[in-house]
Length: 365
Ligand code: SAH
Image 1 (cartoon, rainbow, N blue to C red):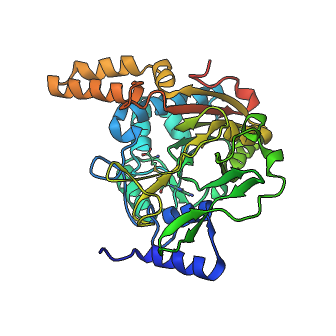
Image 2 (tube, rainbow, N blue to C red):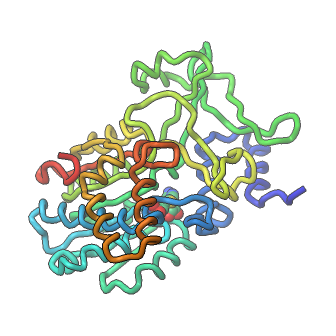
Image 3 (cartoon, rainbow, N blue to C red):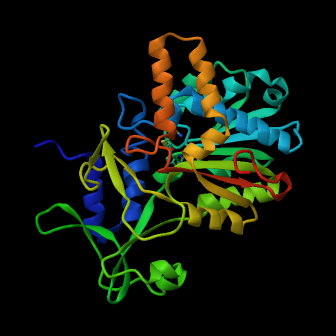
Protein backbone atom coordinates (compact mmCIF):
# COMPACT_ATOMS: atom_id res chain seq x y z
CA UNK A 1 0.00 0.00 0.00
CA UNK A 2 1.17 3.53 -0.76
CA UNK A 3 2.24 5.64 2.16
CA UNK A 4 -0.44 7.97 3.53
CA UNK A 5 0.12 11.60 2.42
CA UNK A 6 1.37 13.84 5.25
CA UNK A 7 -1.68 16.08 4.78
CA UNK A 8 -4.03 13.13 5.30
CA UNK A 9 -2.28 12.33 8.58
CA UNK A 10 -2.84 15.95 9.66
CA UNK A 11 -6.51 15.94 8.54
CA UNK A 12 -7.14 12.69 10.46
CA UNK A 13 -5.45 14.16 13.52
CA UNK A 14 -7.72 17.21 13.40
CA UNK A 15 -10.86 15.11 12.95
CA UNK A 16 -9.86 12.87 15.86
CA UNK A 17 -9.27 15.87 18.09
CA UNK A 18 -12.01 18.29 16.99
CA UNK A 19 -14.64 16.10 15.30
CA UNK A 20 -15.89 15.99 11.70
CA UNK A 21 -14.43 18.64 9.36
CA UNK A 22 -16.66 20.81 7.09
CA UNK A 23 -16.12 20.20 3.35
CA UNK A 24 -14.97 23.81 2.84
CA UNK A 25 -12.23 23.47 5.44
CA UNK A 26 -11.11 20.17 3.90
CA UNK A 27 -10.92 21.74 0.42
CA UNK A 28 -9.00 24.78 1.72
CA UNK A 29 -6.41 22.49 3.34
CA UNK A 30 -6.14 20.21 0.30
CA UNK A 31 -5.43 23.09 -2.07
CA UNK A 32 -3.76 25.72 0.06
CA UNK A 33 -2.05 24.16 3.09
CA UNK A 34 1.23 26.13 3.12
CA UNK A 35 3.36 22.97 3.37
CA UNK A 36 1.37 20.15 1.82
CA UNK A 37 -1.36 21.76 -0.31
CA UNK A 38 -1.91 20.76 -3.91
CA UNK A 39 -1.21 24.22 -5.40
CA UNK A 40 1.40 25.26 -2.88
CA UNK A 41 3.69 22.34 -3.67
CA UNK A 42 3.52 21.92 -7.46
CA UNK A 43 2.75 23.27 -10.92
CA UNK A 44 -0.32 21.24 -11.92
CA UNK A 45 -0.87 22.89 -15.32
CA UNK A 46 0.03 22.02 -18.87
CA UNK A 47 -0.27 18.92 -20.99
CA UNK A 48 2.00 16.89 -18.70
CA UNK A 49 0.27 18.17 -15.57
CA UNK A 50 -3.09 17.22 -14.07
CA UNK A 51 -5.28 19.55 -16.09
CA UNK A 52 -5.08 22.12 -18.88
CA UNK A 53 -6.63 25.59 -19.01
CA UNK A 54 -7.64 27.88 -21.88
CA UNK A 55 -4.44 30.00 -21.93
CA UNK A 56 -2.39 26.77 -21.98
CA UNK A 57 -4.41 25.51 -24.96
CA UNK A 58 -3.73 28.50 -27.18
CA UNK A 59 -2.01 31.89 -27.21
CA UNK A 60 -5.21 33.30 -28.79
CA UNK A 61 -6.98 33.25 -25.43
CA UNK A 62 -4.54 35.54 -23.60
CA UNK A 63 -4.10 37.75 -26.67
CA UNK A 64 -7.83 38.45 -26.91
CA UNK A 65 -7.97 39.23 -23.21
CA UNK A 66 -5.05 41.64 -23.62
CA UNK A 67 -7.02 43.47 -26.31
CA UNK A 68 -10.10 43.42 -24.06
CA UNK A 69 -8.08 45.10 -21.29
CA UNK A 70 -6.83 47.77 -23.69
CA UNK A 71 -10.37 48.46 -24.90
CA UNK A 72 -11.61 48.80 -21.31
CA UNK A 73 -8.77 51.21 -20.56
CA UNK A 74 -9.87 53.35 -23.51
CA UNK A 75 -13.47 53.27 -22.29
CA UNK A 76 -12.16 54.51 -18.94
CA UNK A 77 -10.74 57.55 -20.73
CA UNK A 78 -7.19 56.15 -21.03
CA UNK A 79 -5.98 57.02 -17.50
CA UNK A 80 -2.24 57.56 -17.06
CA UNK A 81 -2.01 54.82 -14.45
CA UNK A 82 -3.92 51.58 -14.44
CA UNK A 83 -3.41 48.44 -12.38
CA UNK A 84 -3.81 45.12 -14.14
CA UNK A 85 -4.63 42.52 -11.52
CA UNK A 86 -4.71 38.81 -12.29
CA UNK A 87 -6.15 36.41 -9.72
CA UNK A 88 -4.50 32.96 -9.79
CA UNK A 89 -2.22 33.42 -12.81
CA UNK A 90 -1.10 29.74 -13.00
CA UNK A 91 2.05 29.58 -15.13
CA UNK A 92 1.74 33.24 -16.19
CA UNK A 93 0.80 32.26 -19.73
CA UNK A 94 -2.37 34.36 -20.02
CA UNK A 95 -0.60 37.53 -18.82
CA UNK A 96 2.38 36.85 -21.09
CA UNK A 97 0.16 36.52 -24.18
CA UNK A 98 -1.95 39.52 -23.13
CA UNK A 99 1.10 41.79 -22.69
CA UNK A 100 2.55 40.67 -26.02
CA UNK A 101 -0.72 41.44 -27.78
CA UNK A 102 -0.69 45.04 -26.52
CA UNK A 103 2.93 45.70 -27.57
CA UNK A 104 1.46 47.69 -30.46
CA UNK A 105 -0.14 50.10 -27.96
CA UNK A 106 2.76 51.94 -26.26
CA UNK A 107 0.44 54.41 -24.46
CA UNK A 108 -1.41 51.57 -22.76
CA UNK A 109 1.79 49.70 -21.87
CA UNK A 110 3.24 52.85 -20.35
CA UNK A 111 0.21 53.18 -18.06
CA UNK A 112 0.41 49.59 -16.76
CA UNK A 113 1.41 48.23 -13.41
CA UNK A 114 0.83 44.47 -13.17
CA UNK A 115 -0.28 42.82 -9.91
CA UNK A 116 -0.34 39.04 -9.64
CA UNK A 117 -2.39 37.51 -6.83
CA UNK A 118 -0.96 34.08 -6.10
CA UNK A 119 -0.71 31.95 -2.94
CA UNK A 120 1.59 29.26 -4.33
CA UNK A 121 5.35 29.91 -4.10
CA UNK A 122 5.94 27.28 -6.79
CA UNK A 123 3.59 28.98 -9.27
CA UNK A 124 4.83 32.45 -8.35
CA UNK A 125 8.36 31.35 -9.31
CA UNK A 126 7.02 29.97 -12.59
CA UNK A 127 5.12 33.23 -13.28
CA UNK A 128 8.33 35.22 -12.67
CA UNK A 129 10.18 33.07 -15.21
CA UNK A 130 7.39 33.44 -17.79
CA UNK A 131 7.02 37.20 -17.38
CA UNK A 132 10.48 38.57 -16.56
CA UNK A 133 11.23 39.56 -20.17
CA UNK A 134 8.48 42.23 -20.17
CA UNK A 135 9.74 45.66 -19.20
CA UNK A 136 6.61 46.42 -17.17
CA UNK A 137 6.56 46.79 -13.37
CA UNK A 138 5.15 43.67 -11.69
CA UNK A 139 4.35 42.83 -8.08
CA UNK A 140 3.07 39.67 -6.41
CA UNK A 141 0.52 39.54 -3.57
CA UNK A 142 -1.00 36.66 -1.58
CA UNK A 143 -4.56 38.06 -1.77
CA UNK A 144 -6.65 40.67 -3.62
CA UNK A 145 -7.02 42.89 -0.55
CA UNK A 146 -3.21 43.30 -0.47
CA UNK A 147 -3.18 45.07 -3.85
CA UNK A 148 -2.91 48.86 -3.33
CA UNK A 149 -5.91 51.05 -4.15
CA UNK A 150 -6.36 52.62 -7.56
CA UNK A 151 -8.26 52.07 -10.82
CA UNK A 152 -7.81 48.47 -11.94
CA UNK A 153 -8.69 45.91 -14.56
CA UNK A 154 -9.02 42.50 -12.93
CA UNK A 155 -8.78 39.13 -14.73
CA UNK A 156 -9.60 35.74 -13.20
CA UNK A 157 -9.50 32.58 -15.30
CA UNK A 158 -10.24 29.35 -13.42
CA UNK A 159 -9.58 31.06 -10.09
CA UNK A 160 -12.98 31.01 -8.40
CA UNK A 161 -13.51 27.27 -9.01
CA UNK A 162 -10.45 26.63 -6.82
CA UNK A 163 -11.85 28.57 -3.86
CA UNK A 164 -13.23 26.33 -1.09
CA UNK A 165 -16.86 25.31 -1.46
CA UNK A 166 -19.21 24.40 1.40
CA UNK A 167 -21.92 21.78 1.07
CA UNK A 168 -25.25 21.20 2.78
CA UNK A 169 -27.50 18.14 2.50
CA UNK A 170 -31.30 18.39 2.79
CA UNK A 171 -33.20 16.06 5.12
CA UNK A 172 -36.74 16.17 6.50
CA UNK A 173 -35.39 18.35 9.32
CA UNK A 174 -33.70 20.97 7.12
CA UNK A 175 -30.23 21.57 5.65
CA UNK A 176 -27.23 19.97 7.38
CA UNK A 177 -23.65 21.05 6.69
CA UNK A 178 -21.75 18.22 4.99
CA UNK A 179 -18.61 17.14 6.82
CA UNK A 180 -15.83 14.62 6.60
CA UNK A 181 -15.33 11.97 9.29
CA UNK A 182 -13.31 8.80 9.77
CA UNK A 183 -15.80 5.96 9.26
CA UNK A 184 -15.97 2.55 10.99
CA UNK A 185 -13.61 1.07 8.41
CA UNK A 186 -11.07 3.79 9.14
CA UNK A 187 -11.61 5.67 5.83
CA UNK A 188 -12.33 9.36 5.30
CA UNK A 189 -16.06 9.55 4.50
CA UNK A 190 -18.83 12.14 4.13
CA UNK A 191 -21.26 12.60 7.01
CA UNK A 192 -23.78 15.15 8.31
CA UNK A 193 -24.43 16.25 11.90
CA UNK A 194 -27.83 15.51 13.42
CA UNK A 195 -28.78 19.16 13.81
CA UNK A 196 -29.59 21.25 10.75
CA UNK A 197 -28.01 24.67 10.12
CA UNK A 198 -30.32 27.20 11.81
CA UNK A 199 -32.37 29.43 9.46
CA UNK A 200 -30.40 28.24 6.41
CA UNK A 201 -33.53 28.27 4.22
CA UNK A 202 -33.84 32.01 4.55
CA UNK A 203 -30.59 32.51 2.62
CA UNK A 204 -31.66 30.36 -0.32
CA UNK A 205 -33.49 31.26 -3.55
CA UNK A 206 -37.03 29.82 -3.65
CA UNK A 207 -36.18 27.10 -6.20
CA UNK A 208 -33.40 25.76 -3.97
CA UNK A 209 -35.54 25.95 -0.83
CA UNK A 210 -38.00 23.48 -2.37
CA UNK A 211 -35.31 20.90 -3.16
CA UNK A 212 -36.15 17.25 -2.40
CA UNK A 213 -34.61 15.35 0.52
CA UNK A 214 -31.11 14.17 -0.27
CA UNK A 215 -30.35 17.23 -2.41
CA UNK A 216 -26.92 18.82 -2.02
CA UNK A 217 -26.41 22.58 -2.13
CA UNK A 218 -23.00 24.22 -2.54
CA UNK A 219 -21.94 27.75 -1.65
CA UNK A 220 -18.76 29.76 -1.31
CA UNK A 221 -17.62 32.50 0.96
CA UNK A 222 -18.47 35.82 -0.79
CA UNK A 223 -15.30 37.59 0.41
CA UNK A 224 -13.36 37.78 -2.85
CA UNK A 225 -16.40 38.66 -4.98
CA UNK A 226 -17.33 41.44 -2.55
CA UNK A 227 -13.77 42.77 -2.52
CA UNK A 228 -13.82 42.77 -6.34
CA UNK A 229 -17.09 44.71 -6.40
CA UNK A 230 -15.92 47.12 -3.71
CA UNK A 231 -12.66 47.93 -5.56
CA UNK A 232 -14.44 48.55 -8.84
CA UNK A 233 -17.05 50.72 -7.24
CA UNK A 234 -14.63 52.75 -5.07
CA UNK A 235 -11.57 53.05 -7.34
CA UNK A 236 -12.97 52.52 -10.86
CA UNK A 237 -12.21 49.85 -13.41
CA UNK A 238 -13.61 46.54 -14.57
CA UNK A 239 -13.23 42.79 -14.12
CA UNK A 240 -13.51 39.66 -16.22
CA UNK A 241 -14.29 36.36 -14.53
CA UNK A 242 -13.99 33.23 -16.65
CA UNK A 243 -14.76 29.85 -15.19
CA UNK A 244 -16.92 26.79 -15.49
CA UNK A 245 -20.17 26.83 -13.64
CA UNK A 246 -23.83 27.70 -13.81
CA UNK A 247 -25.55 30.98 -14.58
CA UNK A 248 -28.14 30.54 -11.82
CA UNK A 249 -27.96 29.29 -8.25
CA UNK A 250 -29.06 25.64 -8.22
CA UNK A 251 -28.81 22.41 -6.26
CA UNK A 252 -26.40 19.63 -7.21
CA UNK A 253 -23.01 18.34 -6.18
CA UNK A 254 -20.19 19.56 -8.44
CA UNK A 255 -17.19 19.08 -6.16
CA UNK A 256 -14.75 17.00 -8.14
CA UNK A 257 -11.22 15.74 -7.91
CA UNK A 258 -8.94 15.56 -10.92
CA UNK A 259 -5.55 13.89 -11.14
CA UNK A 260 -3.59 13.11 -14.33
CA UNK A 261 -6.45 14.38 -16.56
CA UNK A 262 -8.92 11.88 -15.00
CA UNK A 263 -11.57 12.06 -12.28
CA UNK A 264 -10.63 10.79 -8.83
CA UNK A 265 -12.28 10.37 -5.42
CA UNK A 266 -12.07 13.73 -3.57
CA UNK A 267 -11.37 11.95 -0.28
CA UNK A 268 -8.34 9.96 -1.43
CA UNK A 269 -4.80 11.32 -1.22
CA UNK A 270 -5.69 14.83 0.02
CA UNK A 271 -3.07 17.33 -1.10
CA UNK A 272 -2.08 15.23 -4.12
CA UNK A 273 -5.22 15.79 -6.21
CA UNK A 274 -6.91 18.91 -7.51
CA UNK A 275 -10.32 19.76 -6.05
CA UNK A 276 -12.69 22.14 -7.83
CA UNK A 277 -16.39 22.93 -7.87
CA UNK A 278 -18.61 24.84 -10.30
CA UNK A 279 -18.83 28.59 -9.89
CA UNK A 280 -22.30 29.92 -9.03
CA UNK A 281 -22.24 33.00 -11.27
CA UNK A 282 -25.49 34.33 -9.82
CA UNK A 283 -24.08 34.32 -6.28
CA UNK A 284 -20.82 35.88 -7.53
CA UNK A 285 -22.67 38.68 -9.31
CA UNK A 286 -24.98 39.28 -6.35
CA UNK A 287 -21.96 39.81 -4.08
CA UNK A 288 -20.06 42.08 -6.49
CA UNK A 289 -23.17 44.10 -7.40
CA UNK A 290 -24.10 44.54 -3.74
CA UNK A 291 -20.85 46.46 -3.36
CA UNK A 292 -21.69 48.79 -6.24
CA UNK A 293 -20.24 47.25 -9.41
CA UNK A 294 -22.42 46.72 -12.49
CA UNK A 295 -22.58 43.09 -13.61
CA UNK A 296 -22.74 41.78 -17.21
CA UNK A 297 -23.37 38.29 -18.58
CA UNK A 298 -22.55 35.55 -17.95
CA UNK A 299 -22.08 34.59 -21.58
CA UNK A 300 -20.86 31.23 -22.85
CA UNK A 301 -17.11 31.34 -23.43
CA UNK A 302 -17.66 30.47 -27.10
CA UNK A 303 -19.93 33.48 -27.63
CA UNK A 304 -17.61 35.82 -25.76
CA UNK A 305 -14.49 34.73 -27.67
CA UNK A 306 -16.35 35.04 -30.99
CA UNK A 307 -17.41 38.57 -30.12
CA UNK A 308 -13.78 39.41 -29.34
CA UNK A 309 -12.84 38.08 -32.78
CA UNK A 310 -11.24 34.69 -32.14
CA UNK A 311 -12.12 33.43 -35.62
CA UNK A 312 -10.32 36.32 -37.35
CA UNK A 313 -7.37 35.87 -35.00
CA UNK A 314 -7.19 32.14 -35.83
CA UNK A 315 -7.34 32.82 -39.58
CA UNK A 316 -4.52 35.34 -39.27
CA UNK A 317 -2.34 32.94 -37.29
CA UNK A 318 -2.82 30.24 -39.92
CA UNK A 319 -1.60 32.38 -42.82
CA UNK A 320 2.06 32.30 -41.85
CA UNK A 321 2.45 28.69 -40.67
CA UNK A 322 2.74 25.18 -42.19
CA UNK A 323 -0.23 22.80 -42.42
CA UNK A 324 0.54 20.98 -39.13
CA UNK A 325 0.61 24.22 -37.18
CA UNK A 326 -2.54 25.39 -38.98
CA UNK A 327 -4.31 22.20 -37.91
CA UNK A 328 -3.23 22.92 -34.33
CA UNK A 329 -4.79 26.37 -34.51
CA UNK A 330 -8.05 24.80 -35.74
CA UNK A 331 -7.97 22.21 -32.95
CA UNK A 332 -7.38 24.91 -30.32
CA UNK A 333 -10.22 27.01 -31.72
CA UNK A 334 -12.55 23.98 -31.56
CA UNK A 335 -11.50 23.25 -27.99
CA UNK A 336 -11.99 26.82 -26.75
CA UNK A 337 -15.31 27.39 -28.49
CA UNK A 338 -16.73 23.88 -29.12
CA UNK A 339 -19.97 22.79 -27.47
CA UNK A 340 -19.35 19.03 -27.48
CA UNK A 341 -17.88 17.01 -24.62
CA UNK A 342 -14.30 17.98 -25.46
CA UNK A 343 -15.15 21.68 -25.91
CA UNK A 344 -15.07 24.37 -23.25
CA UNK A 345 -17.42 26.67 -25.18
CA UNK A 346 -20.64 26.11 -23.25
CA UNK A 347 -19.46 24.78 -19.88
CA UNK A 348 -17.25 27.82 -19.39
CA UNK A 349 -18.88 31.17 -18.77
CA UNK A 350 -17.67 34.75 -18.79
CA UNK A 351 -18.97 37.45 -16.47
CA UNK A 352 -18.02 41.12 -16.62
CA UNK A 353 -18.11 43.75 -13.88
CA UNK A 354 -17.59 47.47 -14.33
CA UNK A 355 -17.79 50.83 -12.66
CA UNK A 356 -21.05 52.53 -13.71
CA UNK A 357 -19.10 55.32 -15.51
CA UNK A 358 -17.59 52.83 -18.00
CA UNK A 359 -20.84 51.64 -19.48
CA UNK A 360 -20.91 48.20 -21.06
CA UNK A 361 -17.51 46.47 -21.26
CA UNK A 362 -16.39 45.08 -24.66
CA UNK A 363 -17.96 41.72 -25.54
CA UNK A 364 -21.06 42.25 -23.41
CA UNK A 365 -22.91 44.66 -25.73
N1 SAH B 1 -5.43 31.22 -14.36
C1 SAH B 1 -4.51 30.13 -14.63
C2 SAH B 1 -4.42 29.11 -13.49
C3 SAH B 1 -5.68 28.48 -12.99
S1 SAH B 1 -5.37 27.35 -11.65
C4 SAH B 1 -4.86 29.48 -15.93
O1 SAH B 1 -5.93 29.75 -16.46
O2 SAH B 1 -4.06 28.68 -16.42
C5 SAH B 1 -5.76 28.34 -10.21
C6 SAH B 1 -4.72 29.36 -9.86
O3 SAH B 1 -5.19 30.09 -8.72
C7 SAH B 1 -3.36 28.85 -9.46
O4 SAH B 1 -2.40 29.79 -9.85
C8 SAH B 1 -3.49 28.75 -7.94
O5 SAH B 1 -2.26 28.66 -7.27
C9 SAH B 1 -4.24 30.03 -7.66
N2 SAH B 1 -5.03 30.04 -6.40
C10 SAH B 1 -5.99 29.16 -6.04
N3 SAH B 1 -6.56 29.52 -4.87
C11 SAH B 1 -5.96 30.67 -4.49
C12 SAH B 1 -6.12 31.54 -3.37
N4 SAH B 1 -7.00 31.27 -2.40
N5 SAH B 1 -5.35 32.64 -3.29
C13 SAH B 1 -4.45 32.92 -4.28
N6 SAH B 1 -4.24 32.14 -5.36
C14 SAH B 1 -4.99 31.02 -5.48
